[in-house]
Length: 406
Image (tube, rainbow, N blue to C red):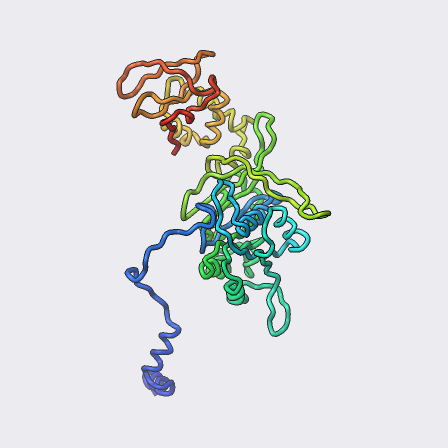
């Protein structure tokens, strides 16, 4: 019997060619034509920070309050509160799966300290299989979790702490991590909810891109659409250390900016204390710049800010356009946040050269409060009052003017 005969016999036994095609179609690859799709905008739980239907990562060193920040976010969702930038959150329900902290004595007290509504918070504590209570396994139980979440309704956020708990294989292997995270990606999409996974930084990775510092495979940062970091940074000039929460990566929006924050202990209930987040002012710069500013020291022990001050002393021998300062600083390896602090320390004068022209930076001439600038277009000198340092007013306070930072 030839190979062809074997195939024909198998097809006949299966009920004919049409039946075989039906079976293959049922298990085949699914394609969709682009013309059948309708473009839709990204929907945000928190604009440019938490996107509905997407996976996110929050990473940082141990002890920086990452879980507390996640809990604060969840509490905010359950009461329809305000985010750190002042925007209002749509009210919804929250799922929390923790493989580390106890819900009753740790997570719930922190949630209550953050002002959350416990009736809208649901902890994933396991799965029942054939009458037996087993630990939750995302590879096995995600369909059942999706069904349970749909019964609850209006689930807007799920927190996974730590996100590596979703990986049953080797968390340092790209392929295994991607495969393990796919159920979380699918859950986010099916529920149209934001999924926030918590992770640590790997040791000995200071100075590297924060996305690359996430513990385990680079797939954690690659699969997540937004990666955020929380870390303590050293204060300068004797100032106290501060904590920062910043965006390290975003495939769907801005990938910079952040907020200062602090952690405080409060009494969540009589006799029960818990930590909560107190948000501070907004900060500019990329996560790498903000972390490097605190961690980096020059080889001779000079601080990053001192180095930036020397850079400005050399560059600003004459009034210099702001865009030139930015380009030169980037070329010299100075973060823009550090350059701005160095400019503050040097009382750098920032001003517009004229109507329709850009901003210029220059060093103050002694204690004088006026300076001269050569405009590019007209080529003539004109005298202007310094609006930085001497008067206590920044250049951004001018009505109708704004220094553009790229």
